[in-house]
Length: 229
Ligand SMILES: NC(=O)c1ccc[n+]([C@@H]2O[C@H](COP(=O)([O-])OP(=O)(O)OC[C@H]3O[C@@H](n4cnc5c(N)ncnc54)[C@H](OP(=O)(O)O)[C@@H]3O)[C@@H](O)[C@H]2O)c1
Image (cartoon, rainbow, N blue to C red; front, side, top):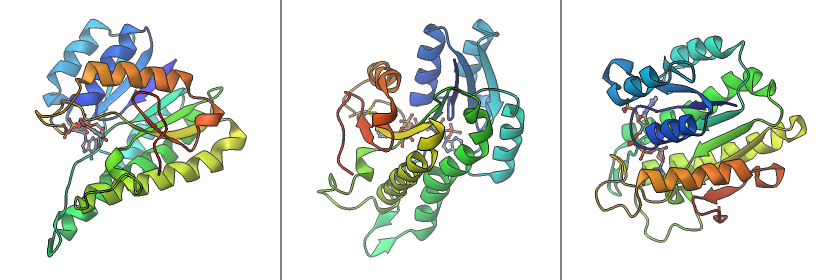
């Protein structure tokens, strides 16, 4: 099985890559800056046949097109759209619209643009899976504290585009769904987070393994429960 993992140089992306390799899968792992991706490069040198590294900035259409071209002759079984940014976007009365725009550019449009570009390679798989890393903060139903306009809106929009992908691709046997990894100890999750990356990813990989047509177009959390939109 060939997995693509974006934002694989640190945090959850690096842990996805580690655990997928340990399970014997092939991984195309991407990062914005491979020169600075030391842990990822060390991992690649220990598994040169299974892990290949690529430069990819999902906010840059040219970078996406170049990566998609590289993937053109491959069969992608699982696309893990992990790359994302936490832009809160200021507070009401002093909102930062550039930050809000950056959130959409990376979390929503970047993820959608990459997915669209990789469709030919996904279509070659029997039952490809598109897994988009969202957040409970993108759930409208779960929003009881307000704020975080940029992050919440960009992930809610990601939820919506994933639902459309699920519907548009259903006839081709490709599934698409969003996952919440938990509140995880990474640069983004910060030091007060509740679980470590290893726990989050081992659980998420079970969720991804089990996912079938009934999972497509849904919002799953790391422990396997469905989250309300
Ligand atoms: N940690 C949590 O508690 C938590 C909770 C809910 C959801 N999530 C979601 O889970 C995913 C991974 O989170 P994390 O905690 O691992 O975050 P992280 O530690 O901040 O890592 C983010 C990753 O995304 C990459 N990235 C950012 N912008 C990019 C771009 N334009 N193109 C390509 N890669 C880009 C980063 O690369 P650089 O090193 O180049 O910046 C980095 O590899 C995100 O989508 C996040 O929203 C995390």
